[in-house]
Image (cartoon, rainbow, N blue to C red; front, side, top):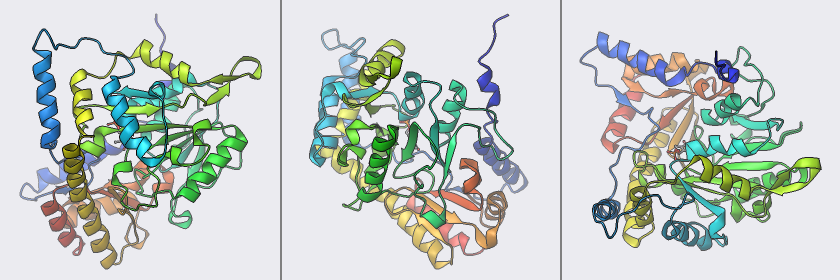
Length: 408
Ligand SMILES: *Cc1c(COP(=O)(O)O)cnc(C)c1O
């Protein structure tokens, strides 16, 4: 009989979102008239802007015409998109990239998991607590961890707690680590990292010969001009960091699928007999062996994000979300909550009232205000006593939800 990858059995059940849905469904069945508002979703709600739809329709028409039809494209992405990425996302910020350093894909979620293929199983991985669950689970599947303890923390992973005390910025690990996942602006805490903080991490990685896996999926939500959008805005980062970007939250592509990963040519890791080996060719091999390119239609649509019209229209949508974030932040602060994030990120992270557990707060909010959020402990044990709200809702719903918060 075939055997399974037993590491999958170590995974704790995907408990968080199914449990949220279960509780919401149960409440709605008992209270059919309740108008529940969700501020729990991590998905965009505004439709794609017209400039992108226009490009998408054009691409669809091209696919229906013999002269302009596209079959398999380059696995690493079309140059028209790679060039637009380099020019707009990097050159404009003083970062020079070569086409060979950018890999277009169908998602940052898969890239942050798949990148682990090219690294040895003996690497010690550091992950923030709380964090986007993909970083932990994909390492468990690969066999880079031991079993989980009762708190849900896996052996061998170095957890970096992020709490109000450290401003949700992880301290540099004291023990040995080889790979560090960082996400700024952060999901779920909404924390952002200044140039000084990122420089500290780049220095750390350089000294410890570690690699930073930098998830910048929310860079478009940065409004403060002093906050870096890319890790490569930090000197020396090309020697130590891989960066993940996505059109999902930037341009509403969660249902279209297009993202990219930057692997600098000069980035190295340890190979046989301790010899330093370039990482870029390994990712290129991995990418082109197991992936056949993002669809032409997605890439043509993504390129429209960089046109003047596209930029303007995407910015408008982000403004809608950021106005929501602002309203959530200010309303809750006025009600006396300790509120974090929501300034350069679409996530608001709050401390529950009177040290209530995350789930008790969830129930109270659902029952007394008919508002749904996400219990912080679902993102890791350090999230206990915290709660995540997202700005991805309509302004009307956010306003209504904030009014109801007053009554709980
Ligand atoms: C939404 C999100 C992404 C983007 O994932 P896609 O697969 O590109 O849709 C990446 N990282 C984090 C932390 C996210 O929340």
